[in-house]
Image (cartoon, rainbow, N blue to C red; front, side):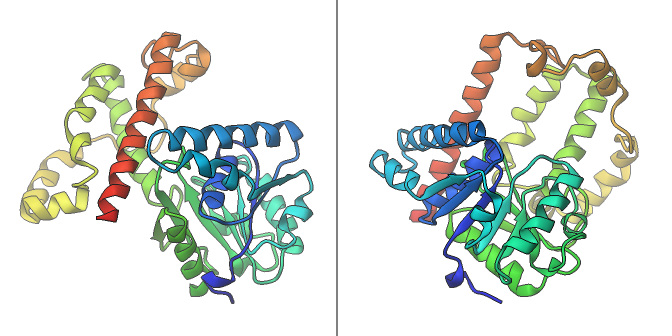
Length: 320
């Protein structure tokens, strides 16, 4: 067993966008971080991206420019997994979403890490219980699903496995609070955890509306952005139900739920587009809508601007 005070060193396994983003957040909170990747190029790009992201945040009131070098000094990189894991108290795996790869990674970490080190997987949908199944000391393995971009989205879903003891959950929750994240406890290891189940239930209905000709894709997105999406940050579904009354909620659901999409398979239109190579931004901007390079760049910019503003306002409100 350990407590939060025992966590002195962090290891990040994987140096891609999620890996280096998570490493940056831990380092910005004052933790020494060892970041591992098989490829030197990935590590070099990750270090460069961290510096750029720290500067980006500082220029927008989230941090200080003079602290960038100090934060970067806390991050070391290695192509040796054993070196990264050797003295780590908390290890966060950020490798590709491949079950065999994750299981193999945790088998190795289980042997390399100190006995009481907590080993976390950053999977977005895969079962932490299944990921841990081939390791010996499975009780110290837990899910911690960070959201992208990891240096801006506060949410981290802490997902217990079938064998996770209370102390591992407690330390993991406390650690993420200590670095400024907003951890939530997912009590059952189910596919998609909490937020992705909510998100993809919404996506399923959105894509169904397009598929059935009820509205085009732009109108679906517009309806959400200018309607319920505006109030979601302060009025989420369960709060909304309590506000309007559970009797009204029951009445609405009794009428409308039977008309909503309930397919257990992906949208036929989605499968058709993928088969045709219409993948969105990654294939010239052709997906549900058609995007020029300037439009793609503008959307990414709007997202970062919005998230930065939202996080800054959140931190200012917490400070009052």
